[in-house]
Image (cartoon, rainbow, N blue to C red; front, side, top):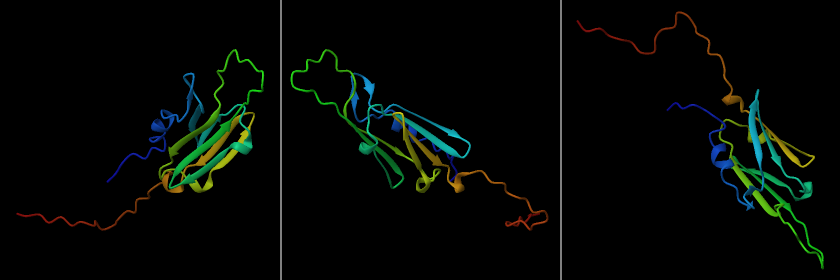
Length: 143
């Protein structure tokens, strides 16, 4: 069976399925795109400590967990509470087109950046044609 191999095919359900919402905003907004032989994912996590991040891959499912907390002190009187806090989680199926063993992560200025290389087997390759090969199927003509 032949099918079009698109490493983004499973991202649609990933991006439309937030685990945590607060005031109608996604807890982990992100962008994903392919540049050359890599898929780049940027996740906005302002106010999240790098120590609270947990990123893992199991069976080609990438899971990102983060926690953002802010504790009221005694006597505080809140006027607004719009910033999402608590535990956030996102998952995506990477598929066979991406190399889950070679993912790199960086966290800077509240943005988690993941570089996911495209697997070698998913990259296009040139098939050479050898002239004069005997056909694998012989056709017999009936008169």
